[in-house]
Length: 495
Ligand SMILES: *Cc1c(COP(=O)(O)O)cnc(C)c1O
Image (cartoon, rainbow, N blue to C red):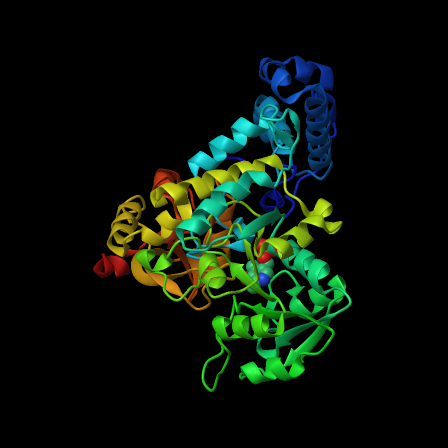
């Protein structure tokens, strides 16, 4: 293939030693004529006149520049004229490319915040489409024919789930994400008063969510107790005064403290709060709704565990271990939930109809115990042997490439289950000239971008986080990689 002017940086090879042929400028077809060409005329209804015009002008202007710099000339010019409409069409399509795109997550990080966290179930997506493509009863009571409340929607199903788990009388409210849930709850319950927090829990959760900063913004006064590694129940007790509004527990979502460590249990904290008449709030971060031990993830407390332990109010994300849409859940004592619901900030943090539709579909799967419908739980449940078998099949798509299949660990990620991982397998690729970054870029620039991870100077594709349905797409991508190292005769022994 020949490459010419324009936007392709690789095409800006050292200028050839020849004189510009200014006569070629006159041979570039007029814009009108190009727009009338069969290819572009057929494309117009699809992309629109304005985009087509803009793309044609941009291409012609790039061609003029290339001619002036003698990058385009001689025999190439005839060939360029033949593919000119196709180049304009490609520009037009590129102009319209959306910024937000589907990608294949081959990083092996299961809840990857940068890659959109939990994938939604088919049922959730179908319910979102159903409720969003027309009108819905978002804030309308169909029995009364009068205004209703949007937060009633997800509440009913969630309360049924709580009841099944032995949690009675818990109420819930939904906001945009867990950061919003924490901010709203602190604003509604502790503004102007003190919230007691252990020094071991003053955490930062990626994307600059820092507990002390959020508290300051909410108007709650941070009262630190204990030390980084040890905080006892007496530390909380001694800090309680007339101005204490909350005892706050923050889940150490993205780090672990090991060694000489002490922290009161949730039940101890709840008992203290109960005795002194002070609500206990927990920022749980990740809100599992079922016992994840069945899926190989141990030691991650769920939403109901906290409520059963007597915590007054729990907040968590909808798109971490819960496996639903981006959302923040506030669950717990009816009077406290009602205060967050009535706070003026609630209106600014509320969610839209598609979020409720997706949440309800996700809760529905939990209620029916159709765990296999929830993509996140399917990812957890994947068997390592099965992942290995898929790696072998994928490796067969690039028989002469330098590649290997290696046992690895997939991380839970996303501020959930710090340090926890599941056994997995990766297809490991070697890059031409050892340039793993270039190979990873090839993968990201494929039609469906593939996000990999680089380790030991090689590119790893962990298939635990790749849906089986994407294997053919991934195989097709592998066959197009420019920087994949091919095996030479000296590699033969490595099969
Ligand atoms: C993830 C997390 C948050 C932020 O939740 P978002 O849903 O990303 O807003 C807050 N606190 C904890 C403990 C977390 O793990």
